[in-house]
Structures are given as structure tokens and as C-alpha cells.
Length: 157
Image 1: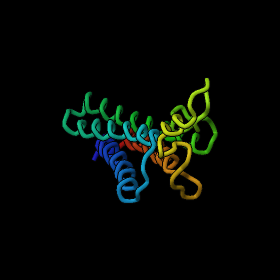
Image 2: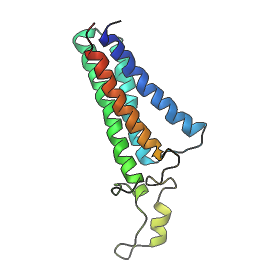
Image 3: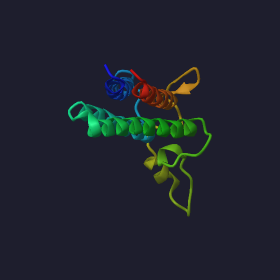
């Protein structure tokens, strides 16, 4: 199996495994995703589709472009995971309503703001292992996995 064939397979399997873990933690582990968790999932869905299509087209040039785009999508999910983990650890503020407590602005009704705040908070990790949240693990696995795929692809036969 060539380096490209291995990279193409890995570009399909890595996001599929990460999505299986995410969906398993949601539906089996009852850890419900926040808005930023969903943001991390979309690039993995795209990577799965791109890598799957790469199996159906000629390797050159379209197959290689699709695998490259799948790798970029995996990296994008990792980057979103870094941002989300930073919000969870309060390194920086979040950019969504689910990451900021309601506040009274311009005499707005505080009760209405509280009621509009989502139940699942983006800045509170639901689960950690060794101090790393699910967003942190997604960042680690996505970024390291993407660079691993690149290394396999570039390997000489």
C-alpha cells in the first residue's frame, strides 16, 4: 500500500473514530454537547465525506486534493478544540452566549437573559481525564493525527 493510500485511509478513519467517540459520549455517556462542541464536529463530518469521496475518484490530481482538504478539515477541528479548551480553562472568553454568564446591559431584564442562556455551558467541561477536557482531547488527537497522516503520505516507499 502506497503512502498516499495509507494517508487516504487514515484521513477517513481518524475523523470517523473521533466522531464515534463524540457521539458515543453523547448517546451512551450522556455528555451533551455545547454549541462549541458542535463546531468541532462539522470539520470532522467534512473530512469523512472528503476522504470517502477520495476513494471514488482517480488518485491524481483530484484524490490528492480531496485528501489534502480532509487533512485541513481535521486540523480545523483541532484548532476549534484548542479555542474551546481555552474557553473551558478560562484562558480567554468565549464568543457565544453559552460561554458567558448573563449580565445586565442597558437595563435589560436579567431573568430573560438567564432564561435565554443554554443549559449546556461551553466554559464548563463536563468530563476531564488528567485535567484534559474532551475539547482538549479532540485538539490533541486531531492535530497530532493530521500531522501523522501528512508524515505517512510523505513517506518514501
